[in-house]
Amino acid sequence: MPPRICFILPCYEEEKALSHTLPRIKEKYTSLVEKKLISPESRILFVDDGSQDNTWKILSAASEKDPIILALKLSRNYGHQNALLAGITEAYHLDFDATITMDADLQDDMDALDEFIKKYLEGYQVVYGVRSDRSTDSFFKRETALAFYNMMRFFQVPLVYNHADYRLLGRPAVEALLAFPERNLFLRGIIPLLGFPSTEVFYKRQERIAGHTKYPLKKMIAFALNGITSFSIQPIRLITFGGFVVSLMSIGILFYALFQKMAGKTVSGWTSVIFSLWFLGGLVLLSLGVIGEYIGRIYLEVKSRPRFFIEQKKGKNFHEKTSSH
Image 1 (tube, rainbow, N blue to C red):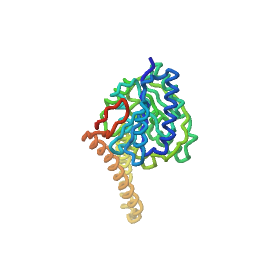
Image 2 (image 1 turned 60 degrees about the vertical axis):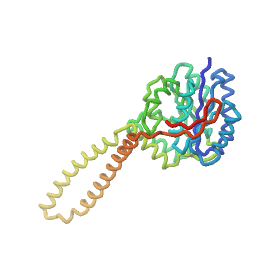
Image 3 (image 1 turned 90 degrees about the horizontal axis):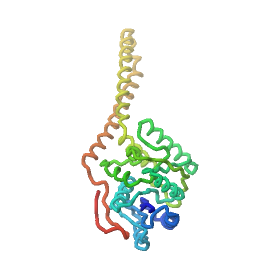
């Protein structure tokens, strides 16, 4: 019997894109059912991450009209990673065999879904959607993405290169994922830690069909910092190494100062003193900032606040009620 798949699409102010996305995903759903790759009991789950536009109105109407459409409304904007987790959690509670997460802006190539499911049927519990090229990206986007992956590799964060959040997770992998209690989610790093049989499907990312990107530079930097501090203590070790190097340098400066003193040229050291003050001051502030990031993460984890609240559920499979996780 074909597997029951839940397709999960997080949305944040995607009213312009949904008029294209809804018919396209339903068309693909029908195609997969006709090919007997998925069960007719599979569903498409949209997660509204606190949108302020008409996104929820559109999703709510679609779920009432079509039984294959499910919709979740989060009580506010919790961020892309938490929206994904909300969808995955609900899919798990509804006993789906596997989940496939993808963007709602049609940039993730839906034609790759056939291969995703075939890999799952071969026994893989994790299937990563990996971009085959970045020709559709701007120069800035391409270079910052390259810098992101290189930085993650340097800090030894487990990542699949050129993989975002287009992936399939079998039920055992979902169950293992939900055992991770952390509040600072970085799913791209957590999934490789699960250890289940995995493979990759390559696809070409499309142009955004409508609307604008929800990941400007500021959010990209915050996302990268979250990934590094969640999975690596390398920055702390770099601070230790930097302190060791500066200590060695200070010994050299001490001998230099003594030599200048004995030679009667102490006034000439003004440049080196100013440089040392600025260098050490900057190093101290940077070190405090890095340590503060880690302490802030610990602070948020210790409080163990709910990662999201669900305000509404729409669809045949749901009993509407407010819940938290």
